[in-house]
Each structure stands twice: as C-alpha cells, then as structure tokens.
Image (cartoon, rainbow, N blue to C red):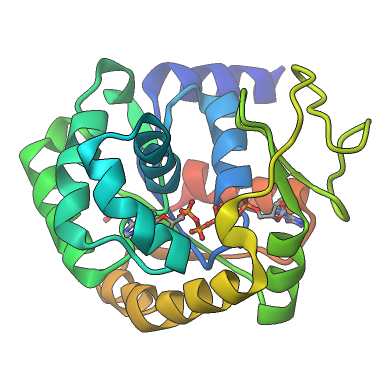
Length: 234
Ligand code: AP5
C-alpha cells in the first residue's frame, strides 16, 4: 500500500529531467522504457529521433545518415533544433528521460543552457549505466527491435516468445544497421573519445550517479529507481 501511494505521488509530480549516460548497448533504451512505464514521462532518444528522420528522408535525416551508418556521432549543431523541439512538447513538462543525449561536452553545455532557460522543468539527475566491453559486444550483436512499437529484445538475454516476432504486436523484428561488428567497433571508439569526458563534466558538478549496468535488467531498473527517488539533484 505504501509503495503504491509512493508510485502515485511520484507519477503525479513527474521526475524532472533524467539523463541516462552509458556506452552503446549499455541498456539506456531498455531502462528508459521502464522509467516511462513507471513514471509516465517521455523517453527522448536522439538515436530514435534521428532514425525516424532518416526513415522519413527529411533534410536532417539526409545529413545524419552517413554518420550513423559509419558509427560516428552526428555533428552537434544538427541536433539542437531537433532536441529543443522535442523537449518543448507538452508531454515533457513534468520531466523526460534523455537517452543518448548529451554525448559530447559541447552538447552538455548546450543542454545546461536550455535547462537554465526552462528552469520550471527542474534540475537534472544524471545516471551513468556502466557495462564492460565484452558484455557490450554480446548485447549489441544479439539485439533485435520491433519496428512498430520499439520494444527491445536480445536473442540471448531477452528473446521474444516466438523467434524474430514481437510479443506485443506480431511485427517481424529487425536488426539495426549499425549493430554490425565493424560499425560497433567505431561506435565504441566514438564513445571513448567523445562521451566518456562527460563523466568528468557531470562528476565535477556533483551530479553523477553510477549504476552497475552489468546486472540483470530488473536489478538495474531497481537501482535506477532508487536514484530517481532518493538521488541528489544539484
Ligand atoms: P543510439 O540509438 O543512441 O545508440 P547507442 O548509444 O549506441 O545506444 P544503443 O541504442 O545501441 O544502446 P542502449 O544503451 O540503448 O542499449 P539497449 O537498451 O538497446 O545512437 C545511434 C547513432 O545515432 C549514434 O551512433 C550516432 O550516430 C547517432 N546519435 C544519437 N545520439 C547522438 C548524439 N547525441 N550526438 C551525436 N550523434 C548521435 O540494450 C542493448 C541490448 O542489450 C538489447 O538487446 C537489450 O535487450 C540488452 N540488454 C539491455 N539491458 C540488459 C541487461 N541488464 N542484461 C542483459 N541484456 C541487456
């Protein structure tokens, strides 16, 4: 009963901005979807937004496509309009989960400016989901996702009930183009070069919370929830 009223109270208040950091395949998307289910705030995944632009063949999608297929980061200045447009939608007023953004120090500085201009959304909580290299390779090469509902599976750790078919809507599952081994290697190099410095950036601000992402997804989710409900927001 107490847990239920806590959940209701949190759902009503929203959770403010939550930034999920971590390497490719670390489980940011998996955890973001659980936070969406629990707290009712939207997941803002720059990877999903960019893939949608590519699929719709927008001007932005046309510029981003080649970078994504090589496993490189899309240039910072292409992202800001897309991100601010999404964060300003009404469903993000009680909070949002940033999954895959920021990924460079320049993006983090831009986001700090955006949050200062939109102080009503609250202070950000930053959670780093850390996973070792070998586990990341296993997770990325085994990932499948549903093109219709976005649900994420893994052939080894989280398979669908029927092979290659989504449990929720029966769609044929797909493998992301950038989950080929040679592209994965470049994504991990980009992460080390460009995104790891964010740990110092947010650590220096006293905002960083660490979670061991190598645990089973339900245990990672419990640790994330604990940080959301009890972590300091400075
Ligand atoms: P993006 O889509 O953001 O990809 P990513 O960061 O590489 O992250 P992933 O989506 O691969 O992994 P994830 O951490 O979400 O893991 P998941 O939950 O799926 O970006 C793609 C591209 O877009 C970039 O390369 C870049 O080009 C561009 N881009 C995006 N944002 C950008 C930005 N801000 N700036 C510039 N460019 C940008 O899990 C992975 C697998 O593991 C799944 O199969 C899952 O079932 C399994 N799994 C998850 N958790 C567990 C667990 N605890 N135990 C066992 N298995 C698990």
